[in-house]
Image (cartoon, rainbow, N blue to C red; front, side, top):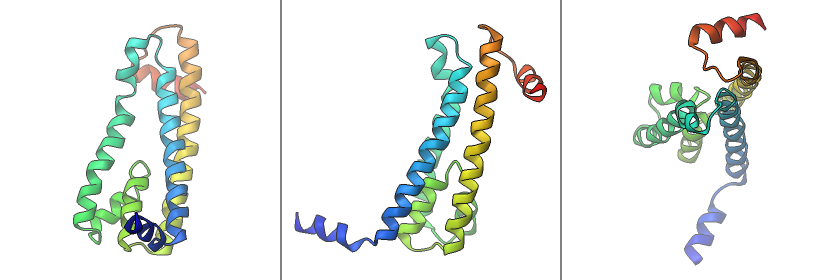
Length: 150
């Protein structure tokens, strides 16, 4: 028990705060994605197909964590950590390894907030489209057409 307590007290408070911020942003981002895609589904059997894309984004982010741990200072690691869907996982690893500048934190949080707003707008349009379609599954062309009409 003593080693566990020492480990918790050895981590700085700003890391805990950034952990909380990134996890909450990830929650809101993926919630809007799942809600928007879930609004397109009319039957329970279709839910798994509709939510495949966000689940794959989460899963691929966790796979990338192992690559980031191996080379936290690589240019591709920094580039991937700016992609909002993978930012929470990759930035937390980079923060823990101490390879993040303060401005990178500001940029990634700003990018995530912008993406959350865009996904919220998109999810609201998908919900409206799902309600108007009355049980039909729209194709990609029909989705684009309906979204432009709004």
